[in-house]
Image (cartoon, rainbow, N blue to C red; front, side, top):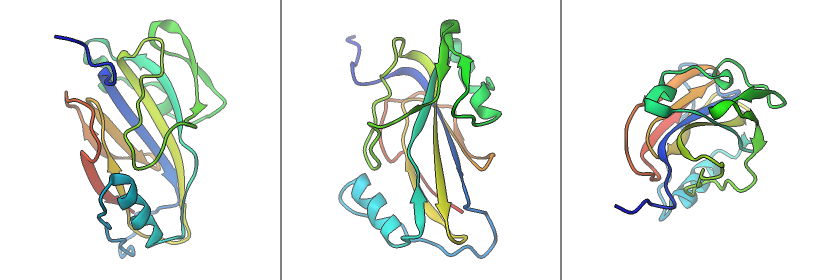
Amino acid sequence: MAKRPAMLTGVVAMLLLAGRLSGLAGADPVPYVRKDTARASWEASLAAKPNVRAGPWYYIGPFDHTGGKGYQAVYPPEESIELAAGYRGKNNQLVGWREGKRFTDGRVNNLRIFKDNDRIVVYLYRAITSEKTQQVPVVLGSDDGIVVWLNGKKLLARNVTRDGGADRNVRDVA
């Protein structure tokens, strides 16, 4: 079977979101505004609540996921977010946070950006701020497993084997 060039093999994406979206009861809901594309839906949903601001994406990796161990492993980005820090990643290579300048909201973003793209863990980080407590729709996809944290609280964990795809996990966060 031919290897798919646009997909990653055995990748666990770990999203670390931070911001002032506190999970208080009575949060002002933001309806999910469905459009023709994921990007248009995301933009329309955020436009309904313009006081939500999303900072730039950052990524760090690759970390080792050989034999599926990366899903259970606790790598340094799970313990604290220090964008200037460097760590030892897969094969003992030095890795550091980089701004995801090519990452576009509402589109599938290819993480095949490392020298070794197979059986890896990649962490993505973004700061999101809101002027008030409210629910905000988050639409995510992944090639294999995904874990999402908001302010240190694990919101989503899926240890799955699957092809990459958008809109696989949709949920409101507050």
